[in-house]
Length: 562
Image 1: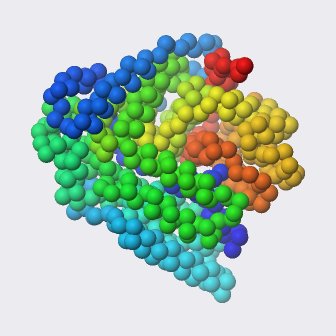
Image 2: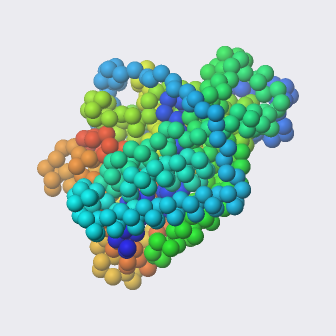
């Protein structure tokens, strides 16, 4: 049983903590993207027919926009990666047509009793499926192929169907479990299992029109239809917390309107409690499940506040514009803008942009240059968030990154899950990764101790696992590693970073003396997600200069503690 539990832990976290990732991955629609120009919406406060919250939101976001006007930074790199200005390799493809979800809609189980019953039915069904598959493998080995035997007996096609149906019906925190499972590498899950669960990301059940109308009326007023020339009732996306509709404003702007499911915010705490009861029966004590779930609960509740997401998005847009205009590493990235007049705590209206999410970009259908370009940008963004912005969007869901072939850029979505990192933490973390880049075990352990990974009393097995995990994380950025292995580019698919780190988790769980630093839950979720993207795309890039650039940027602006 212990081996099966380790399999489960490895799957859900792809390299680090299980549960936070399980609860945090939040989907966003493939071909929709949000937001509009704030400067066109900062007038006529008194004409807004929304409630007082809307009025204060508009002023709040305007002040935020003004306060985030930062001094432009200089990019003092001379000869690092120069991205192709013309990007002619992108000309082979075009943006896809929009797809609308045709459905009568399904109400969400909203009471604590009904949701607990849904969790219970799922747990019983998955448990029965696990025991059935386990028994079948034991009695007659010929009924299971060698490929299926390499995965845990819990990951059967039947269990995938159970999960997909249950998660899609429940939505909220429960649906996030299915979403994170659906974007795992095939080294963790059977391909058929992933294929079935992939429906969770693409085809979550929308809500009935009656609930949609009620939410729109409560948030934007009874006359909400008068605020649009067109409001498309069929959604273009139905996710875990809300669904997205295409609309046209009175002044002719194409927008995406994200509408939160009724009652979803109230269900998060009870969902986490139900999930905690189930996981405590199978997860080792050293996984520190309570800490992970409490962190997940706090962050999920923030995600249900669309005012918080709007503020995050505006801040991120400002940071990217101020740094991206002078940096070749960030110039191909774009954050859509927010329409404050049509945004409330439960409604987020944003500029509509087109493109294809990176989960649709495959080695079979897209050229190597396009896939490498995507990977360079994703890795550059991740390091910029850490070491230049000190502000990270921590949801690595692939549908949050949308390639716009017409504008030759990558649109960034979904800013409900964002966090700041203190410079002291970032300094120690950067130094630990630098130790990995330099293949310096002593430096890794020294800064792991300062970070709080270690107490100083760990045994050799734990220290070795910690050092090895950091060196694996640092491989794409290490010139020494390239030299030692006689490579010029890093083959992400062949190297299987997430899988190799996950193989160290059992040792860490067995020998760990304290939980990992709280900051690393979200950080490693994002970093491992970026590595999985590069692996899925079968990218072959040299990322050493990307790390060098953002390391220099951090130390250039680092305030040495006094």
